[in-house]
Image (cartoon, rainbow, N blue to C red):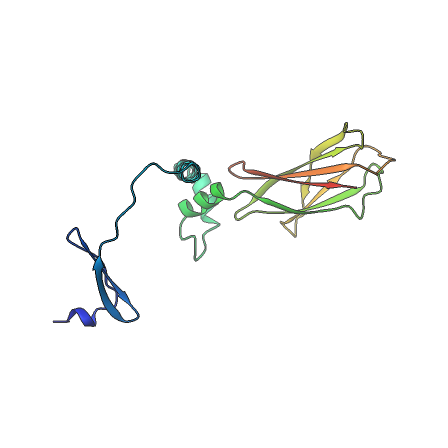
Length: 186
């Protein structure tokens, strides 16, 4: 028979008033902490709503065999099943970290490169080019690089002889349709 001192993982509650846990190799028994009851703050409500939405999204994805299989490709040591991958994907929006304009001279056919990442997968990147007068010159979808999933290329279709003040917006979307936009003014 082992004694309480020999147990390696001890934690829990005794009755309604005592809490037991192991701290630095010693068993500690204290009064059970009081849980503060009350209405959640606005920030807590927002987090609860976000988590509920993510759980519903993940559950829906698991009901479709193809979507479940897609999320199974993202299983890692931290995300141990497809539900966890889908849940995380719903919680975390993609990121657009850079808009590269070194190859953009204002001519039709120039290339604008976008670096976009997500904890699971970026599914599309939308580009909008606005002139200095705030009028939209063109918009369209970037194309993902075949060798580097983070790199997207947008090929311009309209000549823009006056680059000063031109604004390029790149918006990345992930599977649950979260989006993030980065803007660059030339």
